[in-house]
Image (cartoon, rainbow, N blue to C red):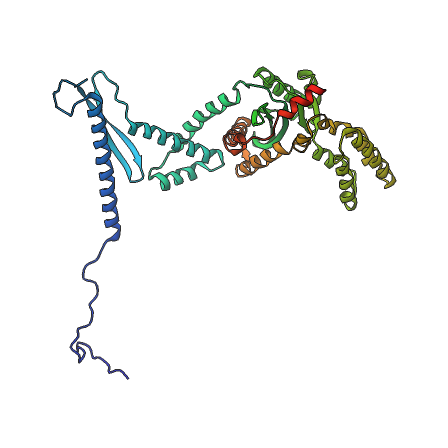
Length: 408
């Protein structure tokens, strides 16, 4: 056993026990001092660069008189700049006649723009104003007020409207149309608001967002207004519209674009047929329907459809047989286009995928205060998508389309 130590008695070895820490280190204060050193160093460096840029611009150092001097100083002004090291104050020199344009201020402008876009993106993505304030405090060390977020929203709304109303340049042989329903608060009640969307494949083979507009309902008058807007903005060269059989849409297509064909979305057509098929027979019916659109041409597809109708009747699915018989021709227009395009134009899937992304973004919002807010969110998201790989990657090779049209 180890010998016990009595109070006040040192060990026999003569080694004194280790005392507690004599000096207390305030790590928080040290970190704050270091941050201030870094911040002041950044501020000093940036101001030194500004002075050097000014000296180079007017051909002389401060207070220096030379024959090559192009101007004289006229004081300076202060400008704040948010950096990773914190907020610094720039002392920007002024000249009497020459404009002083500096790369540092230009970087500041780009940084300011990126901060604004980040705030707007957060708000439009459904983040609450209070949460936006917390995020800006954490990221940039400065809290952005609710009024600032509101002002930024108004600013971006103008840009979004400008993008929505831009002229449509070039021809768009393929156009996809669809709408989605969102919720809005109205007089204490939650009601539906529709947003109509059009995307197109240009003659170059790239996809483009053609239009997005609020519709009171997804009905005839709403589609009339939307198609008229597209026509006025320059939509032309359409050879095939792809959509579901929306109320009032097909009739309006014939009015505004009489020379274009209409392709009823195959997937939506299948779903319509399945409403008349018992759950236990849906899988078999799906295989039969897919066989129709797996044929090599329209003639073979129509013959296969006739066989499917007979088989459905034999299975005592008369209602499903009637739906197929009445609507199958509406789903075969894509056969008139190049076979390389069939897979991409026989359904509305290109637009459906965008709508799913929009729904994912709008789900966090719940009910919008009005239809305009819903429209702005959808349009903002579509504009963002158009600037990504979605809009910069060639979707179809369009050279074969001209050959098919020439033969027809």
